[in-house]
Image 1 (cartoon, helix red, strand yellow):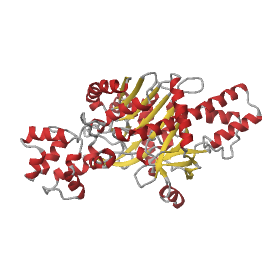
Image 2 (cartoon, one colour):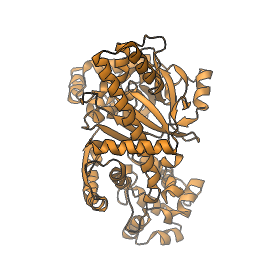
Image 3 (tube, one colour):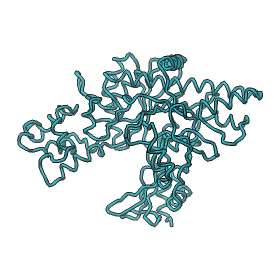
Image 4 (cartoon, one colour):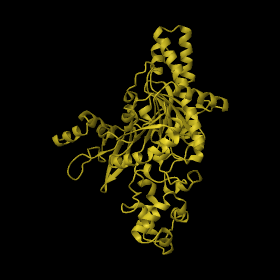
Length: 499
């Protein structure tokens, strides 16, 4: 099935023949649905700390940072903004010339509220000889939209989301990249330094680096810190081969294999290369202006405090296990694993070997928000490969839609995942975990795509906060909805939280 040319192509990507054969087999077999115990809720896997507890956790976090620990803020930022502008691309290509849909009307009625308005006005004057107001007065709405989207204009249809102007300030508009630098200074700085890591696509790397270099000094002076800003790309070795509907390899017109990015789960490799004690993970588009940041900063410190408090206890117990635990100590450790880490043995003997395995692994605390109908996965108690039950973040694709009981759990879940994580990635001896060892490889996902009009199957790796972290210790903390303000369409920037 694989030619010599295929094998050369595979080798250039750093992928083995066995991996390709395994992926092609996964197209045939599919991935098993997960077995669920229940949706997580307050008191059942989700902590809802009161004011006194929040203060205790914030103090724990600040004490931890004072020990000279290395903290990194990890921001997946490789996504292009094209999906943000789907509606506006449709308008430019439409057979009508004036705003017709509710989305189009809202965009043009509120256009002056966008942080990129001034930049767009300048580019319209340059390219069209008229500003936005004059073009709209002439009924030339499409010229305005095209100058926002196209390469000869602002090129927002192709730029990464992290480099679009999101928020207005008196001293100029800011991009999400800049807002993340500010966040890094406010809750992730230690030893006077904020370490921020962006994952960026290859095509945007140089532009991203240039923009960061242009802006970082301003915020370093403002917050009295130094920045250590690093970048990485999704590794070619994490790409996955595409298949035809009959599960044979999909080929390009030149006969070569078609590879596709493996999804955000591929970033577990990038995360694994970060030198840190604690890593915050947050999506590039989930940022707010400075006036709303205090709530975000408070809760980031709270979830980090929960993490380091639990980690400290886990390390104490691992040292006790090393020394030889008494029966009473084993019972105490089993209680901690069950109650605090929400991992149920489910009939397995809670002996020293089992307890060590469940304690000596990466740990994450995930902020979850009350479910208000936003798209996204949710927190569940789920059966693991070893028969135990623990907390996981699940997507709808991982649930058997024919199972009425499971669908009821999913649709009636009280909370969902806003991608708000803080991770502890070193063991009790100070050594970094090898994170790919903790991936549940049976949690991938197959989707239907097309290329040049031909149908194909695409394979996504276990998601970064789903299957890629399946075998981590996981704890959920309820955080306010105000800490979750994603921008999925351009009109989301008109929400009060982004004004």
